[in-house]
Structure formats: C-alpha cells, structure tokens
Image (cartoon, rainbow, N blue to C red; front, side, top):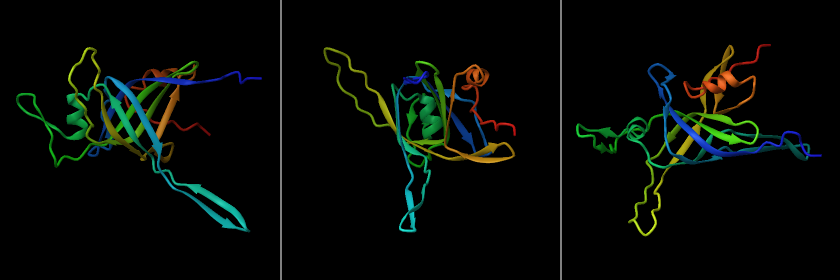
Length: 196
C-alpha cells in the first residue's frame, strides 16, 4: 500500500537575501532577489570510519556546509553592491572593485509541493562574481542568465538557552506553522526550541 502522504517537491521562487551585519551580529531585512532560476547545492564534509573488533566500529561525517551555484535571470545592481562590494558612481555606473570582499548573507527561497510547500534558509552564504555569456540576437530570442558560485557554511545562532551551528533550515506550510511560514521573508527565520 502506498504511503498516505506521497510528498514531492518542485519549482523554485521567492528568493531573498539578508546581509549579515558583523557590527550588530544581526541580519539586515531580507531583500528580494528577483528572477531566481535554479539553486544547486552539494554537501561538503569528509566521512571517517574507525575500525575496532575487526569491523567498522564508529563512523562520522563532518558537516562542512554546501557548495554549488545560484542561477538568476539578471543580477540586480543592489546585489552587486550589497553582496559583491561593487561601487555605484554618481552616474549610476557599477564599478567592480578588485579589492572588495564579498558579504556574508542568509539566502531564503521557496519550493513548491503537491502537499506542503516549504521555505528554506541557508544561514551563512557567500557568492562569487557571476559568469556571463552574451550572444547576438537571432531569429528567436534566447534569454541570457547569470550563474554565481555559492558557498553555505554554519553560523552559530541562539537556540533555547544555548546556540546551534545552523547551516540550513526549512519550514513546511502546515496548520501549526502558518504564522511563521507567512512571515518567513520579513526577517531571517530563527529556530524555536520545543519546550521540555
């Protein structure tokens, strides 16, 4: 018999970024990153197996976050300035500063589902300058997207009476989570510990 809840996920929309402010140790308000096309994430971290008693005795995998890419229809001027350290001059021209350090930010986005859509947060991300390809217009118009390398690692955040090294979180839309789900993009979601 099939599982009563055969959930599948599909689609990608509503991408936001929220810069981390090291002076206040808080996230700034999330900013819309329009035109999200794809996010690709591969886990980072080595596995170690310890042998004893003539067999594998203990195994552990280090969580080194994720590396991957983010494809977007067009990187906005705000993203260039906020996340990559570009300078906007008096005429509105974007100037790439070779000495700029990319900013750290949280990346928020939404994935659809046949049952419960979910909203995701990566707590500590950096991106690299986008790769670009421009081509002449032919008999049909082909949209040129931009792809940026993305790295996501852990950030220590408050959790109950202590902290947790949070890499990623996701919140599915349920009756119980509706309030938190509806406000997910107004500020970076922080986990709430279940009362003992």
